[in-house]
View: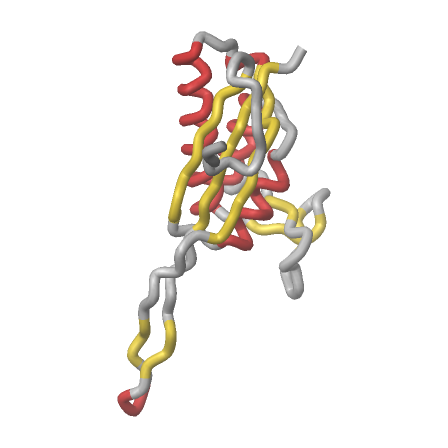
Length: 150
């Protein structure tokens, strides 16, 4: 059996999927943003991500939250705009795929959304006295599967 590259399998009659590979976004922030919208309706998730991009809604940081100031009602949180934009574009791609298949996007929710580390693009930053420091670009692979819910 050939692998499709997705972590989960889905019924093609009621689902649509999209994947973004090697997106230059922090894996830590991408994971936190994905955790915030997992399992939600597609339209609700899109609104939440747009609020993060507009810095109206903070993303709760569950794991990497030492010395992070608290935001009203959610505890330690930040506004990872770059990660939110990348994830929003992939969700929009998945919903376009669903529309193309003739599915009703308004009744769909995010069944699977996962983040994995992509390739690290090596780089360096010049420092004093002829030295240099690693200055690599982390990338992520994001996959989304949306399904119709009854």
